[in-house]
Structures are given as structure tokens and as C-alpha cells.
Image (cartoon, rainbow, N blue to C red):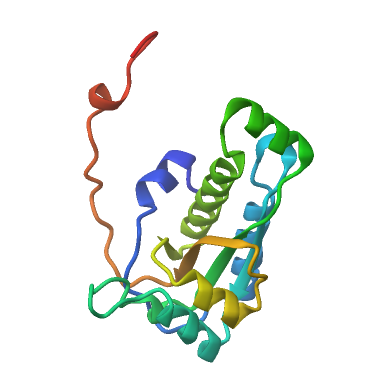
Length: 180
């Protein structure tokens, strides 16, 4: 079993995948980790749509790439696309967000993404969070109501990428104690 620190070291945004499918048991455990994600006032402002039908997955992938800009050309390779839909949160979270001028749902969705990607790493899978997408096209493909937001999707699959060393700022650049 890996420690959390080992998972944090291991997890990376993968952009190459094998064609083999993700086993249902692994996917179920990843989705359970998502379900257990904390959220402001337990609002759970999300719905996750699993897209693993190859034809539909490729159409969703087309809605995430742009040949002119050369972005996300790899998305068809991943076996599973988890499309995250922002749902309305509960009243307590909405009131708290209004009072503090914060959109708690955005924070909650970030936590959800972390749970999903770290659970995927724990299962030996690669992942990549995709924010560049044609939201309208994805909503049409997946019959998502126009009033909903699709802030991102997460690719899952068996990566062919080797582990990359993380290039991060030193702690002294990002952490201070008892003041800015």
C-alpha cells in the first residue's frame, strides 16, 4: 500500500495511454473516492458522468481538442472520460458563499478532482484534468441541461508515460509563517 506522500509524488498529468479498458472494480473504487470527497456544508455540488462507450468517448474527446491550437490531441487515447457537472449546492453553502463572496462549489470541485486523480494513481492508472473543452458540444452529446456547467473532465486509463520528476517552486517561495 502506498502512503499519501508516495501518491502525491506519483500522480502526474498523463497524456499517453494504452488502449486497454479500465476494469469496473477499479473504476468503482475511484468513483467511491469521489463520492467521499468533502464539500462545503456537505453540499456535494457535482454529478460525474462516466463516458466509456468508445464511439461516444471519441465524440467527447473531439470536443476537448483543437487541431489549430494543437491542444489535447491525445484525449481519444484514454479509456474513460469522467465528465464533471457542477450541480446546485445546498442552501447553507449558497448562503455562506454569498456572505463571504466565495463560490464554494469551485473549491469543492477541485477537491473532487484531487480525490479522483489520487485514487486513480492508487489504482495504477494515469489521469489528466481537461479544462479546455467545448462545453456546449459536450452538453449536447451527453444530454446535460443547458443550465448546468461542465467545468472540466478527467481522463483515466493505463498510461504509457514514464514518471516525470516534478518541477515545483521551493517551499520558501510558497510558504510563510504567521504572515504574508
